Picture 1 (cartoon, protein in one colour):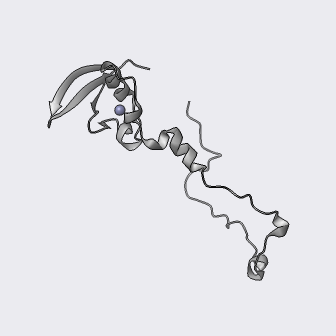
Picture 2 (cartoon, rainbow, N blue to C red):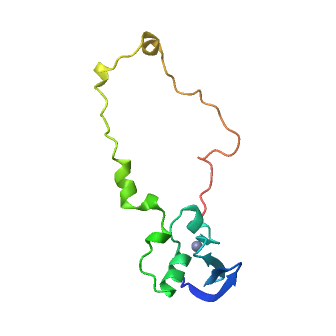
Picture 3 (tube, rainbow, N blue to C red):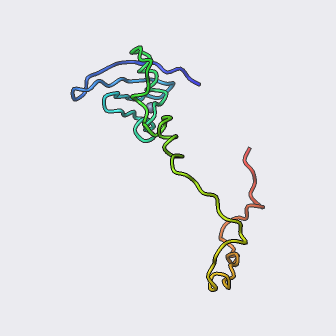
Length: 124
Ligand SMILES: [Zn+2]
């Protein structure tokens, strides 16, 4: 893993933007808007490596405000709040006659165009 460092900090549109450098790459992080040019901060709503570098430079130890509530323990507990009832034994299922008479078959095989996966050379 390559080290990340903050090169410059600029005010753009009244908001603080930190320019974070990784070998050959530059990312722009705005904590106020919760965006990073890598995309993970705004898409996954969790602090990316660049955001963590910026937060550490500001001596921020509580990163909870920069992480979505979906990743927190309360959200996990709410997921399993609803009771789950196991299904009855297959012998006890009540099915209508038309369902019982239905025969489910696998899809018909259709040869696809292109090189067969068996003939494909593996890259090394
Ligand atoms: Zn990022």
